[in-house]
Image (cartoon, rainbow, N blue to C red; front, top):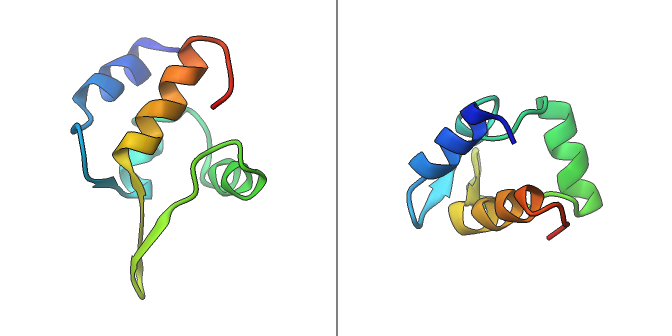
Length: 75
């Protein structure tokens, strides 16, 4: 995990939601297309639909994913 990802991981709130613009490239080091592909395949947590036009990820789920990646495993 890069220093940027680690710093962003530490800066995430303990609870709540994070939008795609906050995830890429600040928290996860991949493109929007890769993010959605990984969500679809189950490699990355699925987002939550908060309203008709708002989709976000639970910060806890993202933290679990990043922690598993840092430890070399999958969620």
